[in-house]
Length: 65
Image (cartoon, rainbow, N blue to C red; front, side, top):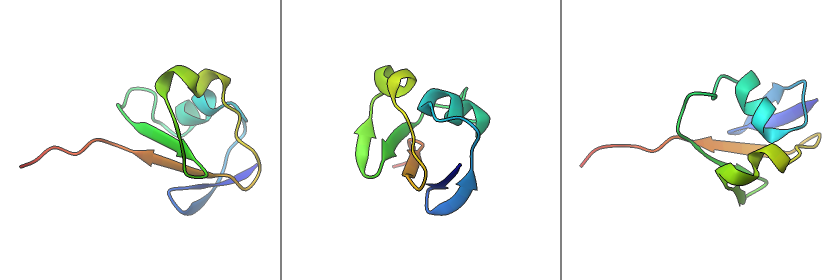
């Protein structure tokens, strides 16, 4: 299925957000996620479905000062 990951067209196999993140290599990274602009907390990723054409944003915290 085609989704948009941080604005880039991406093909994924699964529809469950948690599994999609593993497929994309984010399993061991601290990240924030949003689908179509709506924040998805870590506790809800397992129960959140992605649909064809959805816009998935994955953001990693930045350090600095």
